[in-house]
Image (cartoon, rainbow, N blue to C red; front, top):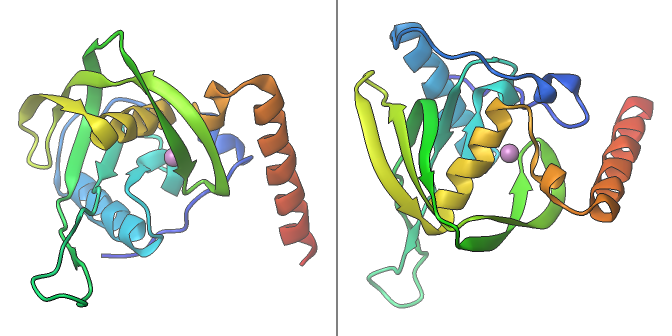
Length: 182
Ligand code: NI
């Protein structure tokens, strides 16, 4: 496995619409393994392939739930539960919305409250290429919708008011200038 460089906004590649995957093979599984390692290293809870420069409809998610330790005062136990989504589609979304303060590994250190359907039902291909369908709510529903936006070239701040969006774009452009000058 390898840690891949993560593309950061305003890189135009993040605006590319990713292409459907024709078949799940070992090359694709290697990409998903690398994406997962990259995501854990960052650290983050979700990563779309385009964020490492690959315009394919593939994403990985692990909410990395932390369980209470058995002993008082000990470190919380991190539970790793990786999810792989190939060619994901939302087949149903609730009218009810949920708001979450979202961030993104491609938009470092910036956050914004985004409203999305609170519950969704999704269909996708799994790590082994088998078809899956499941309903999600809570952080999983939010995270899956955020990552699926990446497949359309959409970033979380596109959902914010123009004022907040302009503020984030300004900060990103400034950060990029500083990085180039450094
Ligand atoms: Ni993101």
